[in-house]
Length: 286
Image (cartoon, rainbow, N blue to C red; front, side, top):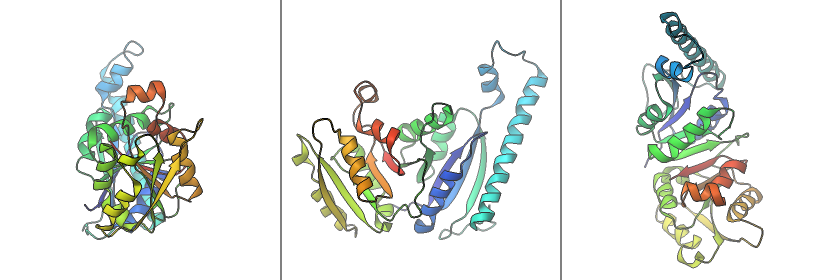
């Protein structure tokens, strides 16, 4: 599977620079293009949120629409500035399949509906780590993971110069992890180094890191297996993150929410811990 279309969703007032930087560093290795999707709530959604706090009039609707247009123009101009700085063609007349360039689209509506449809005709969705103060970030991650059906790249505070220098795959034999591997073969093939880590648990013998490494060899990917211990007071998530950081991982890949989200919320879980604490970019699929 080729990863040629990387989607970077954004919204009014958000700075997508870190996600753009991550997408560009992947794009130059994968010969992919970057599609920036600007998603703004329509007047009806804004009015619903303001219900009871402001009078509804034609002037109010006009002001909302004008604010959205201004935010979109500002976002487009910022993308053009970023493209000029990074030497990335913006909206080229001829879109070459083997070249990196950036495109801009504008949509109006609920984040979940718009991002789901846009993501399903992309190969990878690039989102920020959820920020409680910025609702769009959490909604975008949830939508990308649970509704789109494509791999999701979550970008944190820092973006390595080369995301594919050392990819660490967390493997437990889950359906979600299997989907991630299947959808990310092109990315793993482009990586300079791949390590498959497995945490020793009660069911560790059922899904061995060495078995996945043997499978990847048939796809031309040389991966090194590593078995980790999760002792008392040390969770599976901590073991994976510690190993990835010690090994100088530039990207962590794992299947997301192999248990229900309710269970992860109440009891904690690997996905939740990784999302909240990982310093490196994380590639996920559900």
